[in-house]
Structure formats: C-alpha cells, structure tokens
Image (tube, rainbow, N blue to C red):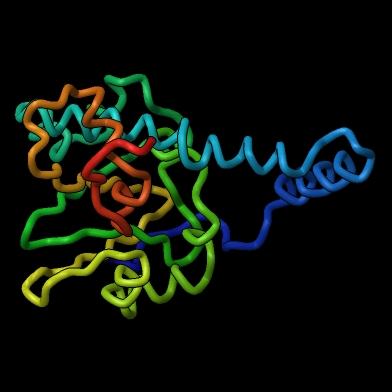
Length: 205
C-alpha cells in the first residue's frame, strides 16, 4: 500500500461538477427531469453498464491463463484490447485475490477510480469514512460489506492515485467449469473488482 503518490484535487466538487448540480436542480425544479428517472439512469451506469466492461476483462482472465499472466504484468494494454481506455484509465494495474491474499482498493485523498472498466464510482467509495477506514481497519470495512476472511488471509489495501488506478481480479467461484466466458462475466460484481465483495456464485436474476 502506498500513500506517497500525488492525487487529483481533493474531494470538494469541481467548478464543472457544481455547474452540473445547479443545472440538474434547475431542470428538476422546472419539471423537465424526473428525479427518479435520473436516479435510475445513474444506477444503470454505476452498477450495470460500466462494471460490465471490467467483468468482461475478469472473465477472460478466468478462462485464458495466458491472458491472465499478461493482465497481471501489463493491465493497461490488455484492457485496451477490449477497447476500454481513456481518461481515468490511462494507467491500470490488476491485483489478484487468492486464498491467502485479499486485495481491496481505496483512494485516500479523493476518489480516483477506473471509469473505463467500472463506470461511475459508487457514493460510498467517495465518502470520507470509507477512504479513511479502508486503510485503518480494512477487515472491519470488509465485514460490513459481508466479506468475512479468516485470520490466515492477508489483507492488502491499494491506494489509487491520479497516475495509477487498480482493478481487482477476484477468485473464480467453484463449480463454474462448465460456464462460458459470457456466463462467467455475469458473476463478476462491481464490488468484487474493488475488493469489497467476492464473485457471485450465480448470475443475478
């Protein structure tokens, strides 16, 4: 874990974000935008469309040992092979979870997040309690997300920065040998790629 990398501006909203918030409020007030519909749209990009990109990368690593080796050595270029690149995903590194090591990602000073593979960052990821507690008491935080680890499992916390962002390669669930790559991708949740969750045992309905 590292804390000596430079980060982007702090967690305060940028001028652009403030203008977007003001515009959103005005549109809602005038009745041009339904807040519920807007929340649903955000949920789609935060939890469905965006994370599907990362899930495709993870599923390929599960079924293709050569790709997995390359992904762990040169994540940025491997991810580009899927067409996932751009701002906030220029420099990527993948950390593999194993029975002995559990990795999780945080950005302690702001909210650096790999948008090309995970979409919009969840609200909790940007919140101060997660950003501080993920470092000081990671096992407790993981427990609150429902991830219970044995005392023999080492927890490693990786601090994302403006220069480097992380993606977690979760462990492949057992008894999934007969699933296709596309079916495996459905088992990869956003949280499992942040490290605050594990891969699903069955696809969500």
